[in-house]
Length: 388
Image (cartoon, rainbow, N blue to C red; front, side, top):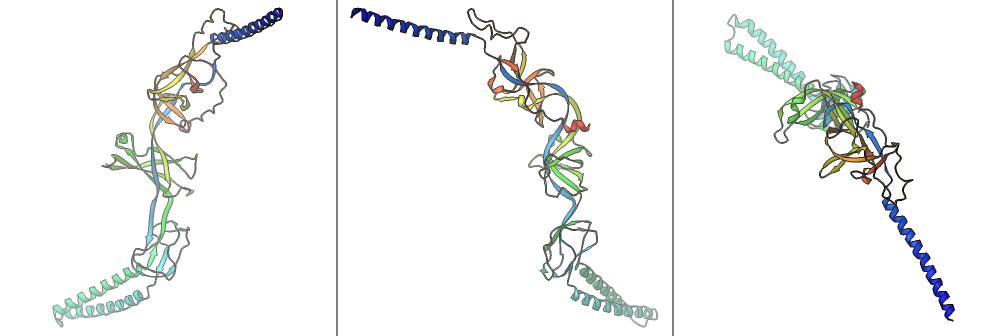
């Protein structure tokens, strides 16, 4: 019985020793893993470079026609004829709407008859005044009566002319707002008339930017109706007064619209191109990290590999001798203009340095990295530079 108990006790001790050995080996392996150098973190990088950079002044504005009005009637009347179709082009002087003018024409015929009689009596009085057959006062009365009749005829002709609404300039007429037989009061709108061959874009800039503006300066315009397409305009006027409430100055640019694709009232996102073009250090905007302490980039540079500790089983994991040991350095920078996914670095970065553009969230200052194949889409060249 005693012998059997000793055998069981011995077996238990052996099992415990085996489990302890396995646990010790597991703990030892974990310790060795912590002692071994960490594998590098794969990042995508880009080399900073100096590129021609043209400064621009961004603004927003509204398109308007070079000539545009809302046609309306000046005097009340009944519409007798509409001589246009909605949306068609009209020429200058073309009749648009005719109002009923029978009463005015009858009144004009009566006034012309009175004028003819007044002229005859005045001519007769002129031949009699030399022989003193009539008095001077009678002659003056007949002269005044003749002039009054002429004024009445002119007044009725002017009133009759207002019964015909003519196009004041050539352009495209809008949707008509009246029909034949409508009685319209003075000021009733008929339709809009817009000259779309040339458009204006009005926008505002801060008073500090006024010295940078000049007549003839190029302006690049984009509208939501045609995404990705740019239209060229030129500054034609600067308001000589700064708005007191906003401290902004109004600027007007002019652009050709031969195809009449752009319409008055469209919202315009524009940039005023400044004449100066200088070389600037430019990097993708994804390279920037924004913090409360300032903007920074992670610069990849050669570092010194850590020495493995004695007893560490990391010979296979140690970095190869022929490959550089790369680490990242956090560099605080001063940024400038941002445009098209790129940003100008004014201070803190030299051309030719490699900066991380993907994978920054896993990195800290001094972290070991390896340059991976770039999978981030490259930015297209600036169209403004290509034009030059």
